[in-house]
Length: 105
Image (cartoon, rainbow, N blue to C red; front, side, top):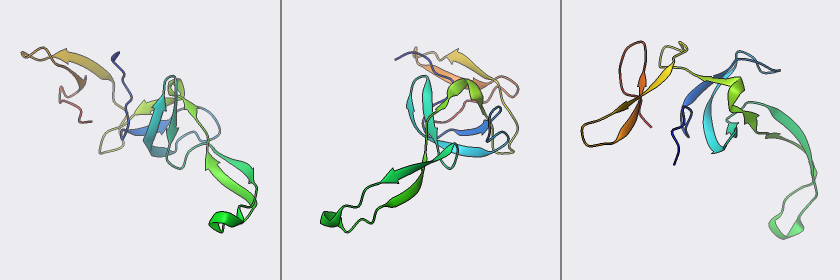
C-alpha cells in the first residue's frame, strides 16, 4: 500500500468547491476520491421497493469528492501538514509537521 496522507476516519476540511469551509469525517477512500460524511450531498431518484418496505422518491446522498479539495485538520480545527517518519522497527507513520506528533488512524 502506498503512503496516503488522508485515510479513513480522518477529520478533514473542504478547501474548494460548493462546500468550502465544511468539515467532516472520511467514510471511505477509492483513491483519488473519497466519501466524507455530510459533504457533497446530491439528489438521487430512488425507485420504490415493496420487498423491503422502501418508499420511492428523491434522496440526498453523499457523492465522492477529490482528495485535492480536502485538507487534514486536528482537534482544534487547525489545518495541518502531514509528513512521514520511519520508526526503528521499519514501520512508516504519519506525523504532524508542525508539532511532530504521530497521527492516529
